[in-house]
Amino acid sequence: MAKLNIVGVGPGSPDYVTPAARKTVQKAEVVIGAQRSLNLFTDDIKGETMILTAKNLNSALKFAVESAEKGKNVALLSTGDPGFSGLLQTVLKSGFVKAVEVNVVPGVSSIQACAARLGISWDDACLFTFHEGDVSAEEKIELASCIKKGKEVMLLPDSRAFPPREIASFLIKAEVDKETPVFVCENLTLDDEKVTSSSLEEVSKQTFRSLCVMVIKANHKEKG
Ligand SMILES: C[S@@+](CC[C@H](N)C(=O)[O-])C[C@H]1O[C@@H](n2cnc3c(N)ncnc32)[C@H](O)[C@@H]1O
Image 1 (cartoon, rainbow, N blue to C red):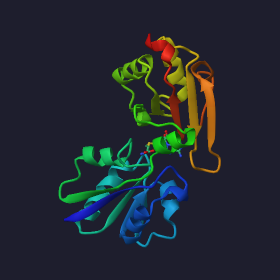
Image 2: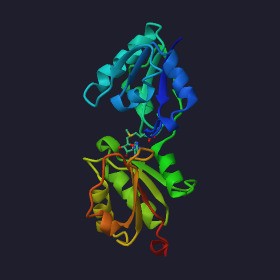
Image 3: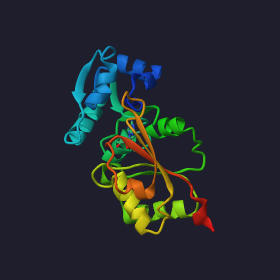
Image 4: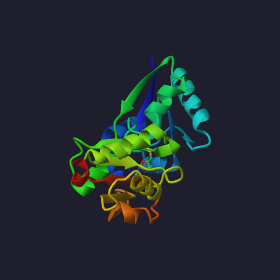
């Protein structure tokens, strides 16, 4: 059966591209990915390339699946790990995949890079992604509830639909202590990586870059 490889490319630095990801791309006859992902493989790509954008997502996925169905070896590049807020779910939900085998090559997620940067264990953390405007009222309520229960939260904001500033304002309105400690980690692993250690109140007044992970620390005052 033809194979569609969904390849995790890590948070952005070439240092976090795995050898398995590189080998998969080297063997691919078709490589599809965002420009910043393709740039990580300039010396590896031998096949045809297609630049993935928010606008051509559907047609690019269709092309990826059709190429695999024709027997071509296809690599679809997904930032971080494909399984967290990545292209795996998009492909599985697309309905295009019928006669191809999906092979996932794991990558280092921005969540992992963030936890490592802050030196925190994420065993018990509540994970959320609001990327691509995926912001339901239920998820917002669950977010506030996790923090009130004293759990640590790691989340991917959406720079337009639900940026860190609005997340912080929402939580303060939901009666989470405004002094709750917050970290915002921008452009992880890249040369201009920045970590801001702050509070909900301060974050509610600030603007951050679009590539960021937000960590809301367990506030044990809330529990009792
Ligand atoms: C479409 S999601 C992809 C997440 C990816 N699958 C992962 O595992 O990291 C894109 C979001 O991931 C986060 N992100 C990706 N790379 C990042 C980086 N280098 N630094 C901080 N956040 C990053 C940002 O929140 C960004 O909006």
